[in-house]
Length: 328
Image 1 (cartoon, helix red, strand yellow):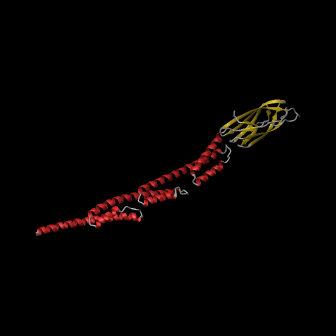
Image 2: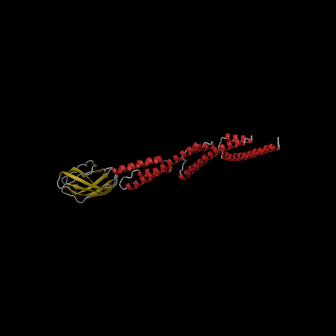
Image 3: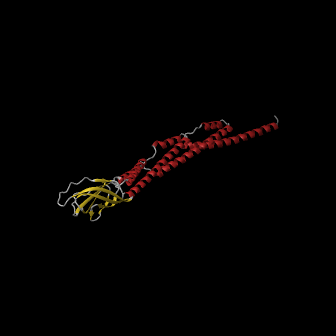
């Protein structure tokens, strides 16, 4: 072999060595980048499929730097994609935990296993399912917070309606019901609080829309041609409070209008006045009861035949009370 041929061989060998050196450096760099990414999973104790990584290491150690670089680059791209998914999951999980902390809920709105299941999926490298799990938890949390807001809104609304309605209706157990609704909200039983608030609002609406109910007994034992002291009673048996209740007789003389003032629901109003029947015998008498409610002024009328006695005669027994339920 001539010197020229030997020189050419040496030059070719140097070129191959240079190329091999360059491929070694490139492969080494790719392997190092891959190892850095893999260590991220190991530090976070996340499972990672190392098959591609091991193949790249094996090829590198055997001197197949070109294959090692190709395998390392492929594994690195896949790993970078996994890290990106992991970062998305971690960000979403932080959002969930912060939302729970900001919500000021006294009780954990989720089963204790729910977030642990997401953590387990993350640890297994199943980022897609972990992300779906966390998204579902966020939706559940928002639903709970929306229900809480609805419950608080209904509590405020029914409390305001009670405050506005209490001058006109019998309070009954409305106030204690409102206190119970507040307890349900405080204990985070929002669904029950909403149901109780709806029921109470319906009950108050029915009470406000009801017609007045009164019971009145005509005076008995009146004596003709003299002033008789009459003690009258009106019992309010309905759900509405009655204001400025007044009573006038027609068919028999009276000194003044009988004024009962305010008669609250379930109460009885009293008034005393004078009545003067003109003649003894049966007398048809009409009573006009004027009153006011939140709906305005209204009138109730009732007719009855009264037995008027002559002076000095025994007084008859009292008749049963009469219920007045129609307005005129």
